[in-house]
Image (cartoon, rainbow over all chains, first blue to last red; front, side, top):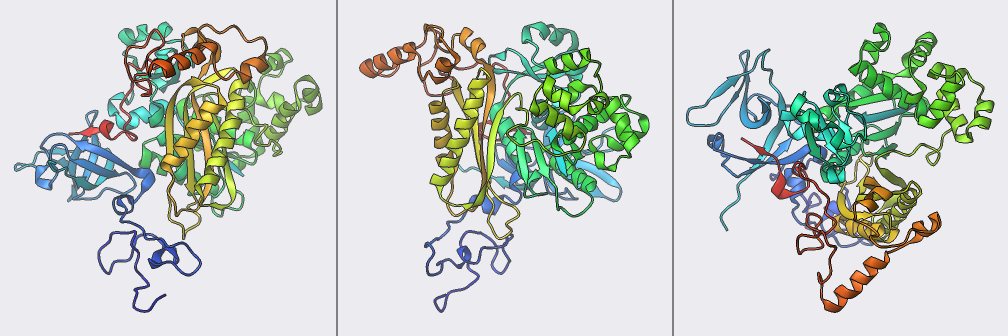
Length: 148
Length: 449
């Protein structure tokens, strides 16, 4: 390694400074400048690495309507939904509700299980034996397309 | 030890995964041109809809029983299949895809309780994909297939096998956990027609000879079975008795897809090697296709890194391409190689690749629907049919189009101008009721409220 270059540099991943990358790294590819005898490889920032934690379980869905605007999800936004994450209180999730797929915030505290809209006056549907909670997946990112 | 995992009613299950309105309802998936029912939900089976039953024979059930019919959505099923195979591959380096929804897992040397591991795999596929599966475990592939059948039957028809066994063996059935008399009991209650490799004709002949249950079959003399049927059939029976001996080549062909896939001896990074391998697999698949008198309406290519090489970055691309139905190796290989180049990314250590022919149609039936060989004379031999590249009509069309410009001459039923788009080509299949391609087309992603 040429002196002065950080051995931990891995140009292929976008992550917070100081935080370890999620995947074990190939020591050769992660050195940024390769090593003598291997191809020179610089990896561009990769959306898949950044946005997709569980490739087999990740899907995209489109939000329709205004029921989650207070959570920062607007009509027409693209949701990245991960089915491998276990949903917990406070997560924005996609759930099956009355035969439809809906996007709601999950309430799971003090013995209450419910799905809540993120509107100025949140509307809540409580889940129970007659209507059990049926989680489809957890929303990990909401992508808002800009007018271009 | 082998585990055979397969998705229950796969095409229907994929549709339900993205459309909860289909849950609990009688649903069928129709083949290209909406001709026949190639998948049925349990509720549709309960209405009496048979596998491959022509659509016109059951369409009255729409009004009378609320039957829902969907056109086949092969891009969706193939993509979900790739995801399922990748999940299965987490549990063993030796995951052998057998068809679009089935894989054999070689679990030799895998530590731990194999039944628990299978339950974990089943739970992962259900949570991550929304697809229900059944798993059968045994020390031969044929027995694993049988165990899978038992797992399914115990789940769907709890009364069929003794109650004590039924609840233990539903969804995941490990034959190695059974006492000999319990295994005998299962085999006595299983019809020979449900054995992998026993087709209708063989089953009829066996029944005529007094062999009706699987127990009868394993007690018959293998040598006389070899004389009466074939060496491969004898191997099937030996496998039922617990002796692993069927090779991949001898294994019965899957019915609705032709899949050829191999693991590489060493990891591969070069696209040309992948292209060559996939071309080879496609050619082999095409041979089987022609042998069975079918044409294919779609081809999926896939290759993947290994999750067991923990220092490797992971990437498992696949691509499904719809085709003018064909059994022509050149067309299929050309589509396959283009697909490989389309999805290949450098810098990964690929360990496995494969090609799968989907949307299989009977060649004669496809002919009759006017999609192929409109005016060509009947081939004089199977060999001629197999080696025929293009019909005289297609050649004449091509020459005219070259001379007068693209689209100058089209097959009479064509309604639109673009001849390359699968949706509007002259040979476009009727897909009036196809669901959106939720996972492969950006514009068709599911909508949530």
